[in-house]
Structure formats: C-alpha cells, structure tokens
Image (cartoon, rainbow, N blue to C red; front, side, top):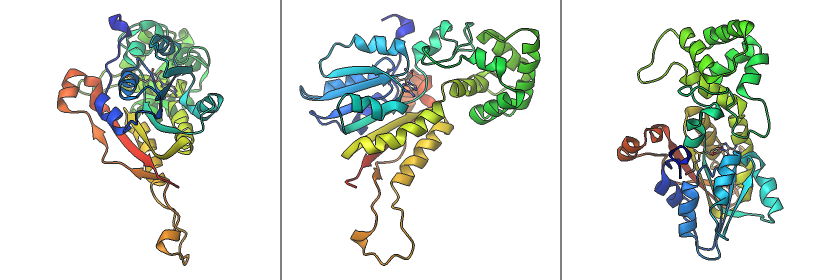
Length: 309
Ligand SMILES: C[S@@+](CC[C@H](N)C(=O)[O-])C[C@H]1O[C@@H](n2cnc3c(N)ncnc32)[C@H](O)[C@@H]1O
C-alpha cells in the first residue's frame, strides 16, 4: 500500500471490542475508509458471520473490493441511506453498526481531493466526487451571510465575519478555486493565532462539513440504525469534533431515556422502556495512541446497546 493510501485506524481495539462481536453475527462498518476496523471485525467473525461496509468515497470502495472475503461486501453509499442499502441486500436487522466519522488520511493526503490547507490543490472537498457541489462552486455563489454562518457554526470560528468578507472581496477579482488561495485568504483575515493550529483549520473544517452535509447525514443515519439494530445489538460511534459528538450524545441519551408520560397510573413494568442502553463512559484514545497518531487526540467513542423494545 502506498503511504498516501494508508490510514491509521483510531481506537481500533476499543471500537471493535465495543461491538461485542458474535461469530455468526451480521455487522455494518458504515465508514470503511481503508478498512482498519473492518479487518479486525472479519478476524473476529466465524465462517457464517457477515460484514457490510459502506463508504461515500469511491476510492475507499475500490480499496474495499480488494478485501476478497466471501463474508464481506461493500456498497458505495452514504450511511444516511443505510436502511435502503440493507433492504436491497435483504437484511432486516443487524447485530452491530460502527461509525468512524470524518475524513480519512488518504483523503487529506491527496492534494487533488482539496481537503488540505497544507497541500495546494483544486478546492473540491467532496467525499463523494460523483455528486454535489465542490467547495469552490459553493464559495463562488454563496452569499456573504451564508459563508459567514457556515464558518461560524461548523468551524466555531470567531473571525467568521472577517473571513466571509475577505472571501467575497477576493472572488470579485478571481474565483477562489484552490486550497492554497483559500488558506491564504483565511490566514490574512484571522488576526490571532491559536497554538499549534493553522489559522485555516476551522474554516476548512466548516466548509468540508457543509459541502458533505456531514451533520445532516449523521442525524439521518442514527434513527435508521436504531430501527435496524436487533435486541442486544451495539452501536459504536467515533467522532472527531464537538459538533458531531453532541449529535451522537444527544441521540443516545434520548433513546436511552424512557419518555414518561406524566402522572399516568402505570406500574413499573408497564412504563415505556427505552430503546437503547448506554454502555460505559465515552472512550478517549490513550496517551500512547495519541503519541503514535495525533489524529486520535480529538476522538471520542460512544457505545450503546439496543434493548428488547
Ligand atoms: C475516519 S475514516 C474511516 C477509517 C476506517 N475506520 C479505517 O480504519 O480505515 C472515515 C470514512 O468515512 C467516510 N464517510 C464519511 N461520511 C460518510 C457518510 N455519510 N457515509 C459513508 N461514508 C462516509 C469517508 O469517506 C472516510 O472514508
């Protein structure tokens, strides 16, 4: 595997352990990437086990087709389409689902994908290059207010207003079509420097989240997953920033709380039961893992199990 095509899997053992794999179970790795988690899941499955992988990125799907294991299949789709994907495969329920959110190293490392402010390339940022607007197309037509809102909300960027203004001023001269151009515009507009953080970090994260509709897809996927999990099946989600972690945390908490209609004269066992049970506390990477892979620093793993309801 070329260095540019490899991805160091985050929380590998922890996430696969969290799925409590049964040898003959059916599992979904909804974010295949380069298959670090998938390979360990396959190691733990027996001959009758099954693993379905999804990825939005055609290059990840191409890597998955090289796995060559009869128990494994891959589908080029967003996890927001999971219910339909499984229905087409004739599957009504699964024993566990893993989401390892965000971008992979091959996506970041390949300048041509346009995710990186460190490597100059076309300003694309789409995980699925077969559809949707590129970052450059969006920045060409979006209003200043829209750009400001995205950078503020998805990048939690204090200088969103100044950055949006600078982008709109720059595009009057020539369209912003490369990652280098965008990084330079943002660098000049952000007046203070955060320690060990490029000034373009937050803006690139924001535009990427917007272009890929990352939070919307996550919000669409979680209720589908809940319906697809068999009783006792696990959901494990690794998130990399507070916006997606908040969605996961809130969803799991809500599903793990019985909605009690006030003042209904019900006995304990007649009360509505929650559909999820939270498993353990959120898991963070060890100091050792972070030292070996700085990307693990911001990872949080949350796990929940489907109840019998
Ligand atoms: C952090 S990487 C996964 C790495 C993988 N666990 C491994 O060990 O190699 C995230 C992957 O999820 C994919 N992805 C992100 N959002 C997605 C979505 N909505 N649907 C499907 N795949 C998605 C990305 O294309 C990327 O390949």
